[in-house]
Length: 187
Image: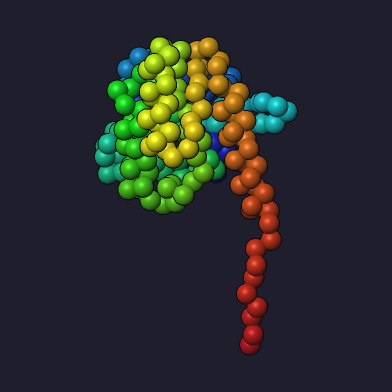
């Protein structure tokens, strides 16, 4: 593993800002796509626990075929225990943005579609109440789970997202620690 959790999403979903907010990492942050060209790592300390968080460069349509260097980025995601999927609240349609990234994960395969995932709507500080409600509804429908609403700028929902990721990591570690049934060998 390169990280306990990997941040995934479209370019400009707020992944680098989230990493900078919750760790001492100093990723490049700018208001244009593909600011992040290489995965960035940071250590999160919350509730007396630590986890390593990876900022994976944004995925675009065709990433599984190498578009935007996506196949290299997807390979990094393979080495993360859980995904924190950030969907930009200011996108045109949060559900469509979520589904585009999921299609790329599924097309790439290699166990990515089965990875545990926490879903969050990011940049909610930039949304009015009606748009926030609409985007959360769209994302909930697409992800088939209630997303966390967060803003790295204001801090709203950040701790909730970290706690959700930590819960999933602990569940995964617990499942790995369970003894696996073995088949008896008879000569």
